[in-house]
Image (cartoon, rainbow, N blue to C red; front, top):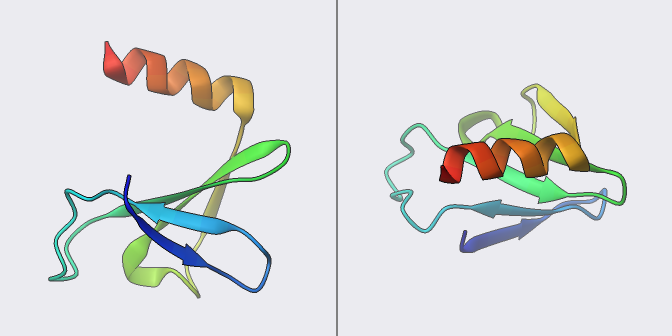
Length: 66
């Protein structure tokens, strides 16, 4: 992940360097103290936010890396 955006809530959002600048379908991820947050980059400020426990996120990443 490469592109970083910090928000007023102190989360640092990362978007993949594979994401183009044309506004395609991208996810952004931010690591909080006790959870990882995922959001749609097209609706970053107003859209829904997914909160995942750190252990669950680690299991997801391990499975995806496969």
